[in-house]
Image (cartoon, rainbow, N blue to C red; front, side):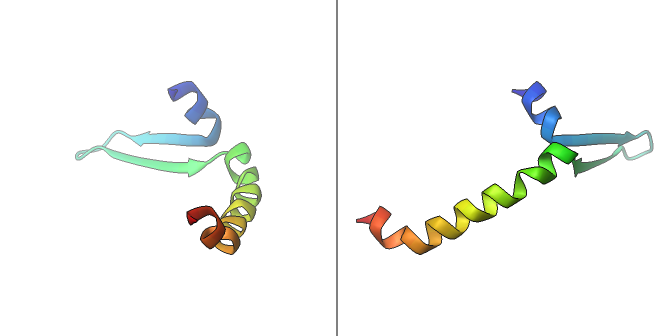
Amino acid sequence: MTDLLDDFLHREVFPAVPLHVEYSLTDLGRSVSGPIAALRTWVETHLDDVSA
């Protein structure tokens, strides 16, 4: 599963005390935001039908 997440997320470790880690989306991770937003809109529009 970690390998799959590596395709979507970039992890940068800064060797400091305390340890500092920053995460950001890769290009592939950013490219999925449109389809996810469309799915969210669909769910919000059809929530009553799905709940029934």
